[in-house]
Image 1 (cartoon, one colour):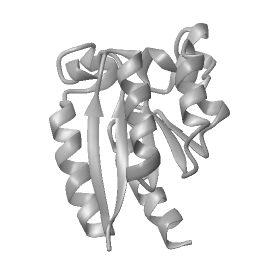
Image 2 (cartoon, helix red, strand yellow):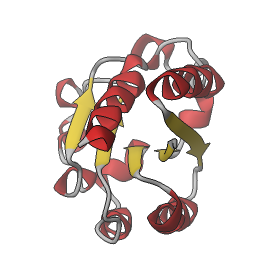
Image 3 (cartoon, one colour):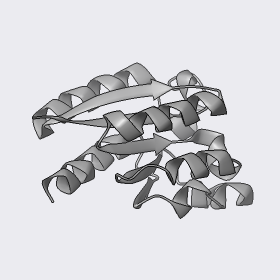
Length: 146
């Protein structure tokens, strides 16, 4: 029996591969979704990758995940540093939450060093490029086994 993992992405991540490739690389979100689906299948996880530029949509998906997902992997983008509402939604989710950032946010502007999401996250992966999603999936598979 597979367990679903919701992989949620925030604003501007729809532009991966085009936006600031020197920071975020040339892979698209579709590339990441395909890699996550393949790895998820290998690990016995069903992945559902979504992206929105709208805070309320991400909150709705977190609420939906309460009934449909074992865990959440979230790259909240800029909402990381601003959204108490996303933090509140994540606090209603009982499963594991892993926070992913493609860049090392701690080497960037000072305002990026604070994360509201980290207050709920069970783990944070930053600075491993798009491979961070796969690392998070591997960790999620470990948590499923427990």
